[in-house]
Amino acid sequence: MKKLSIYLAAALSLFMAVSCKDDDDTTNSYSLSGLEMNGVVAFIAKNDYQNITLNVSKLKSSSGTMPDKIGLYYQVNSAKRDTLTKDIKADPVTSFKYRADSVSTFTITCYAYDVTGKLYSSAVSATFEAIDPETALTGLSGTVPDGEKYLQKNIGGLTWMAQNLYETTSGLPYESCEVMNTLFGRYYTYEEALTACPAGWRLPTAAEWDAALGTDSGPLMANAVFLDSELWTYSKEVKITNNLGFNAIPAGYIDRTGMVNINSGTKEFALFWTADAKDDTLAYYRYIFGTNPVVQKGEGSRSSLALSVRCVK
Image (cartoon, rainbow, N blue to C red; front, side, top):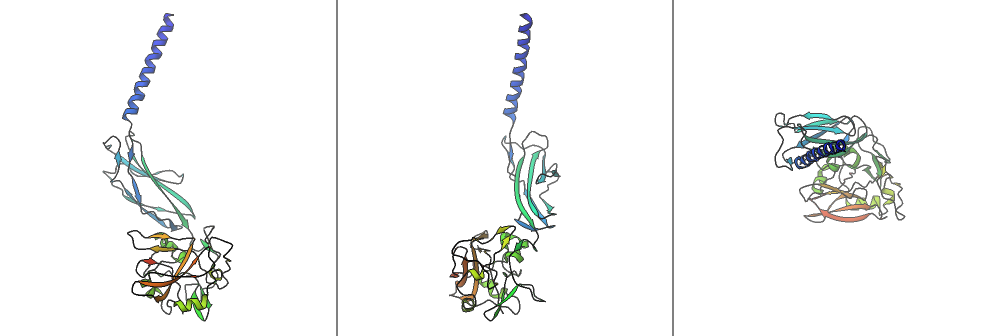
């Protein structure tokens, strides 16, 4: 009985010691948060680099005090992590590059952590696609004449570009991704569109658009696929034939009235400026909505609405 009492006392002492340690750990454990990652764009070309910026200025701990040494590392998909620095005070790494060496989806996760191990880490992630611009978009028809760089089609007595204009001296790229220029084209305000067409080309007038391309949207719409995803939404009312070889794709538009330029209407709308202005503030465009069989007429701000452009000659 005496021996049993000794065992029980020893067990109780061990339990109390463990309990006190757990309480101390719980009391003293705290978290690190506030790491920010900027610069990651949604699409880049295979073998190109993502330029990534880390903002550590907003890092904070739940304890109210910061550790002496904070390190940074990153991990791509499930690959081994790569250390950027083990002390941001001594080596203030704020940016780095990552090369996407294959056509794939990449998730890059960055961590800030207490080198002494007393804090949990703060993590932030972003996902992007590395693409091959030559193969990412399929379903367009037509040929590129010698010495030219755009698909072309003769329609209604005019030569039309059979893909969206992507001259880079003006306009904006899709989702701020330059690799998308030759695929979706760039987005131009009316004022930019007036001078964006290359030498020998010009904007079509509203009358030329209507006479050559008509009101039936189906003959204009390409059965296009981007990264294995169909671009147009199919409906019973719309018969997608692309008979005219115009290759319309639903690239959407950009509203440039705010501080941030955001793409809208992708996979829903194809919108194109005409050369005709309504007045000093508005200009006319033509647009296709994926579930409506009729080419429709619209008007929008000459300075803030950014649309696709097709040029003629």
